[in-house]
Structure formats: C-alpha cells, structure tokens
Image 1: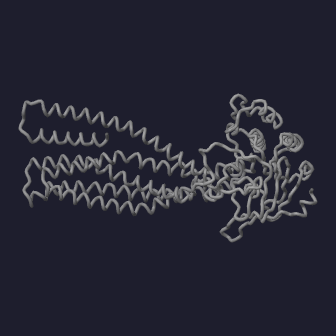
Image 2: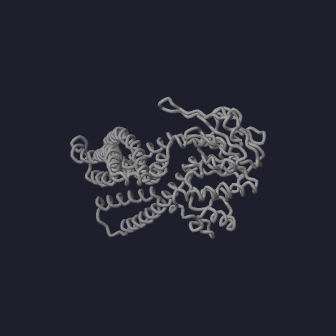
Image 3: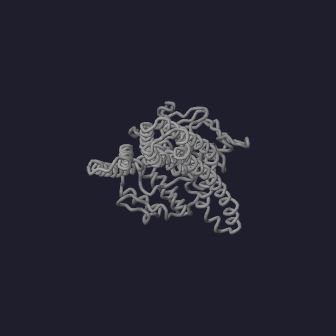
Length: 517
C-alpha cells in the first residue's frame, strides 16, 4: 500500500508537469485525475500507516517472546555466565533496535518502488540525462555506505558499553542501602564508576551517530548536485528542451524524499545488525531437554543416585572450583541434611541434584535409569526448590489454588496479610528478606512435588520460625511422603534428619557423615 501511494504521488508529479508544459485547456480531465490521485494517496498512506503500527507492535512482541523463550530454555550455567544485566539489555534495547529496522522495511520498499519508477520516468524524458543523474546519485549512496561502515565501529563499542551501564545501574538499585549508609562509597560509585561508564557510552554514540548523520546528508546532497549539473552544466554539452528540464526538476526534487528515506533506514539496519550480533553472542542455544510445549510429566520417585558425579567451574585466574566425585543415594520419604562451610559446593550439589546443572562426568540415576538429555526436562519436575537467592513471583504460577492449604502454611509462617487467598497474589515487593524466604517456602510446599530442596532456608530466620520449620513443617512434609534435602548449618536440629552429610572442599566427608548419623 505504501508503494502504491508512492506511485500515486509520482503520478501527481506527472500531472503537474503536464499542466505546466501543455497549452491551457478547459478540459476537466487533468483536475479530475489530480483529485483522484490525491484521494488515492490519502487512502493508501493512512492504511499503510495503520498496518505499520500493527506490524511494529507485533514484531516487538514476537522478538521479546522468542528471546524470552531462548532464555527460559537455555542451560542455567550459560545464563549465569552471561549475567542478568546483559539479558535485560538485550530484551530491551536490542529488541527495540531490531524492531525499528524491521518496521521501517515496508516504507523502504515503497521508497525503492518510487525511486525505480521515478528513474524510469526520467529515462522516458531523456535517457542520457537519466544516466548522468543515476551515476551521481550512485556515488552519493556509495559514500553513505562508507560512512556507515566507519560509524559502525563506534556503535559496536557503544553497545558493549551499554552492558556495563546497565550492570552498574542494576548494582546501584540492589545496593542502594549500602550506598546510602556510606557517603564516601556513594560518591566513589557515582563519580568513579557509574558516570564514567555512561560518559564512555555516550561519547561513542555521539561520534557514531554524527558520522551517520553526515553520511546521510552527504548522500542526499549528491542528488541535488545531479540537479545542479542538469540545470547549469548539461545544457552546455547537450541540448535539452525546457519541458524536459521542468520534468526533471520536479521529479528529482520529489525523489530526494524516497532516497532520503532509504538512506535514513540504513543506520537502523546498522544498529539492528549490531543488536542481532549481540544477541547471538549471548550464546543462548536451546537446551534439547527443554520442551516448553509438551505437557508436564512428573515421573514416579523411588530413589535418586549420584555415581561418580563431578562438576567444575572455570576461572580466569586459574583458580577454579571442582565438586566431586560424589557418590550419593536419596530414597523416597527420606529427610537428608547437607552441611558444610561457605564455598564448599553445597549449592552446586543441589543444582546438579535438581538437573539445573549437567555433570561434567558421572551419572545421575533415577529409579535405576540414567538421567539422559532426553528425560532431563521431566526429571526436573520432581523438585520444588528454595535457593539462597531464590525469586518469588507476585502470584502462584502453575499451581492450583487450595485456599485451606495456603492458609495453613501462611499461618505457620506468619505471612497471612501478604497473601490474597481469593486470587493467590502476593505482595512480594513489601517483604523483608526473611519474609521473602518464608513466602518461597510456602510456594514450594504448595507445589506438591515429590522432592523438596531447601538451600540454607533457615539462615535468615529468627529462632521462632527456625523452630517452626524443623519441628512442624518438616514433620508435616514427612507425613505427606515428601523427600526433603535441606542444606543447613543448624546443628542443634540435626536430630530431625534421617542422615546428615558434610561437604568439605567439594568432597563428601564420609567420616563426618557417619558421626552425625
């Protein structure tokens, strides 16, 4: 529709040319054609704009959906290596840049159609003159592309700088209490970290955008130079009629708009290609074990075993961490406590146990069957987990709302006033850190999975709620036939467990386990 409107506008130029060059007449043919062309231009432009608005929003939604899907199905270690700030930047800025480029494409198609037809109209007036104009305009386009190539280097660096700005902004939001409590730290962060990062990004954006702007203006100028040559130079070499000059002048002046539209779209393509390359560099390859469209299948649970499991973290300073080899068996209905110092590998063990990490070596065996990539997605459905830095959504997700059950656990955990029992919504943004973990525990209990894993849940609770957890909630889960694996330092409650294992520097301490048992 945009191309049709552009061609209709070109027809208006032709009608104006005819009215200026043909003898005056009382015929209503030209006015009628002019009025019809105006109405057609209006209708096509309005319709194409409406479609373009719909397209732009649909495109942005599709891009966010696809990128969110890639994030949700990518392996957890890769997501942790990428960092939340880079993912947030890609979901926001990169998606917007790609959307701008894609939604500008229909308009560019219209401009290309108008430009081609306009050049054809010029050729019909005078083929040699049309060749000269095309040559000069082509030189301008080539110069424009060279400018974009130069600007691209600065814009790529600016996109890298943006990750740093987003990361530091996120650090400011999460660390605002620490900054407010120490003015020297606050000033050092603002003037020594955040402001320099933003300044560096801004400088690269300004230089890159300025080069793009200069290249755009320079490219359009060449079409006007072609017009100047046509008016002042060409008649000295080759005889051209006044009617032809008039037609060329009107057409070239009109064609500066579609040419400007095409050249103006190229920076958007430049930015989109940078954004797309950035998304691809995130390395969010899909995890074959994740099939989001398949129904949830929770396999039966009798026993879970680790055989010679190892997992290692690489470090740039060469001081990585290695867990294992671990040999461990958990049976249905068991309550297992895992103890150990900070950094000993407890959380890594929990992530391997839940299938979030795939072992570098060894096997995880469920009910006598090795957990392979093909069944890992279903295997993960066995677990409800509360990690140390776990997140609580503002509502129950994927869980049937059992008001009696949720009221029971909310009362035990002292968080009744933060839950809407009718809708299952939470006031998650008003919770303290301890209340946040109690809400996460409630969600895990409501999830009704065979195995529950609690990663140092009681570490930030007051003595009353610690006692409730070990003396009331764990026994209740045992009565329901649940298997509990709790990472804990509370040795005064070790008697509540069937077994206590200790991890020391990535290894299970068998001696400590026997003594605790």
